[in-house]
Image 1 (cartoon, helix red, strand yellow):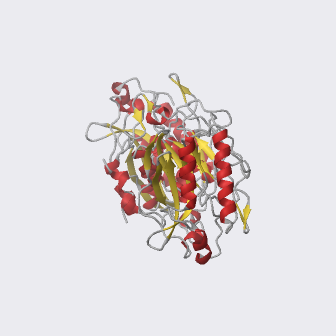
Image 2: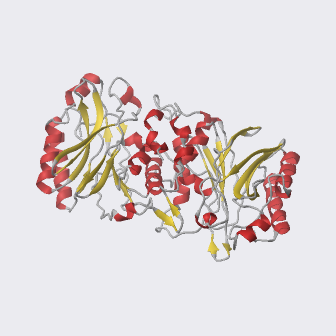
Image 3: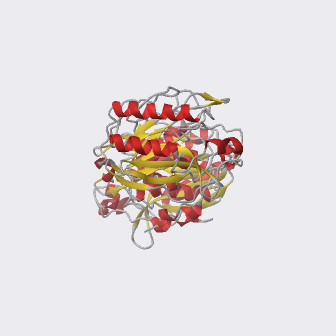
Length: 265
Length: 265
């Protein structure tokens, strides 16, 4: 995606969705700020690409979802009715717009006079293809937040991300993916992550898209840095079975009355 | 360790501590139920190996800590004053017993008329060697619990564990270690795990001991299944610096007022 090339970006997203449909996908996850690029020069530039949740990008995704009976989760720069800009993601299905989620944990220069943080819980939506939650990028580094979606019954968490490329020790999987694996395993919930790739205005992206199963293991190749489409067949019944031993259940074993430290301000 | 061979087990633990001291260790972590074995036939057998926190095992560890200026974190079956048995760990240093922690999240047959679950927070203790927290095995699969210790200032979390060996996909690191890595990274806290190894009454153990840095990467080889001593030099200042970008801090970025779902009972 290239900042500012709104129509070209929208067409590329549409082509990616159609390619996924042709490959058999019914739940499709696109990156954070999928239709706009990420490396905005300033708020003025960001405003030129922001759209409302009833704007042309979301409308196009709704029509595609209706035509092909899809669930699409995609990130976009949301122009709020309040005049503020949010780093948001929608969940649309064949019935239209089901949820708009505004990223709660903002990353670095998103905070620098660009985006306003959301303050509503991650949505969890019953769809024809399962009970699906939404979280965005840095949200995944707050296990409390992922837990909220899982406790609300998400069987699959769909996560638009833009992961900057950082150095890591030789042979080590990127920490962002390790956190996704752990989030999945401790909740017995599938997680599908769509990342950005390539180089944008000096920023290299990890390209770490992955689909992780309810045991926390990747169902797809780790294709770091490649522009790719990852596909997996998922049996969400596995995410509804929270038992992991004769006497253990990852959610029932929680001791919520002891976790008050986590909500201390 | 062999269930029932109390004196022999205690001598083996002592020998392991002395070997670590000779290798230069000053903070030493031993496995869960380090001095007793784990696969108890029943409560009657468990009672034969349980000791109070002022019993001979803890007393021996206190004397070793005093002699060599150590911090020792070790698991043992605790005979409580209330007549109940806890799956506990102590933290001792040169001044004596600093904390007794009773495992809060019990695993499988521990619940089967053997151990009683604790209900106190993971202790975090200021020692000559840093601010050190304690959690035990399955506790690590509850990120809320690890977060509690991190928010209380733990720079290093010392974790006695007994990880049963489970199958995993080829080429994948054990899920237990992935969770430790994620817990470390999301808190910028070091974690040292001492696991059991070998075969005990039909149960194969993972032998997944590891020391993980504040970025969530292993500082030690992953020596699955080996009886081994892992050593790492740790600079705890790294754990006191929670910043991860110009504008991000893994703890300050939390939104605790939004995390109330996690404490819902």
